[in-house]
Length: 168
View (spheres, rainbow, N blue to C red):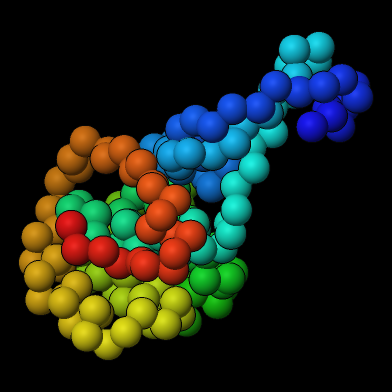
């Protein structure tokens, strides 16, 4: 592959890629082809089926064991294609509240956290029985206090095959 910046040949390898472009600092994707240019330090990651990958990340966030943080709230909102003014109508809060959550100026309440997860699941078309399992088995485990931010390492076989929401 030739570099888009300088035209030199790029060296490519398959590796675990730190997927910062999603807006989260803790997402890594396994077996991604990454091409590097030694001449100008340009890096290109070739990630297939990006919408499916983002859905897999969103579904991992649905099972997070503590309240969502601002970056995660923003990720979920953007992944279902809603502006803050649209999301506010579903959650029964004003736009300023969503802004404060996303900027980590205010913590999301446990009730709004769960409602956001349900709104996300609805918009993503997650099956009713899976949502029921989330509510029964996962929502009762959500902690109010912060826990160490988990690293999400996404195996491409999960999202490239379309097999989402695996049992954890």
